[in-house]
Amino acid sequence: MCVYDEKKCPPNIDQRLKEFVSYFTQPKGLMYEVDFRLRPEGHSAPLATELTYYDTYLKTRASLWEKQSLLKARIVGGDDRVAKNLRVVLDTHLWQQPTKGWIQEILRMRRRMEAERAREKAGHNLKLGKGGMADLEFLVQAVELAHGGKKSSVRTPNTFAAFRLFRRMRVLKSADAQKAQFNYVYLRSLEMMLRLNSLTNSVAMPRERVLSKAVSVGLGERSIRQMKARVSEVRAENRNLFLKTLRALPQ
Image (cartoon, rainbow, N blue to C red):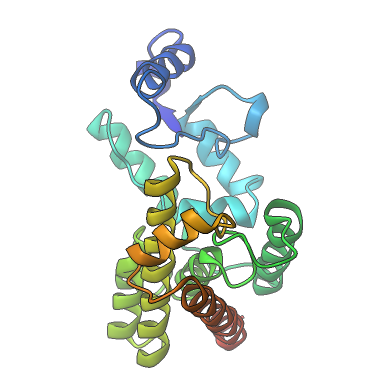
């Protein structure tokens, strides 16, 4: 997402940005996936958003899921003054007391992701499926929404760092934080092995035996069966941690 001050917006910034990103990613493949869909108003809006408009949008129309995704936002470049003002805008709207029923809304969003985006029946989607990485990412974001307004020290855009912070700040039981961190690292490692061995951005459990064997070896598992059993165990633990944590949060 790109934000500008109306006095300093270069002409045709949205088209220029698209061309810049495409130039550096298309010829040799993707180094990072670039997704502009999280901008205000989605596909119908320009790529760049004026700061005052964005402030009003967050205050009056932004959905919970949009604010939730912005908890991971990092400012990576641009004018220092605009960046500072954007940080103020984000902090003002992200760390307010969540509205009534927000935990139920997060649970509804997860169920919808599983049904509409993961579209899984046999537990293949490691990211969006039941017990996948999204369970732990939603867990982190829910804890930040619940406590971040009063405890700025629990705020971090980094999921790995969040588990350490939560344990130190005692907003999550030490054993739960350790388990969540271990499982997240395991699934991320599995995802990395999948991408290295298939040259795709797939986050689905491999079905081909050759690929499954390569991934299991990369993870240090003794066999494909052991890897699949471990993944099932991790996903069950993740779902349990996700539901237990959300039910214990102040509403």
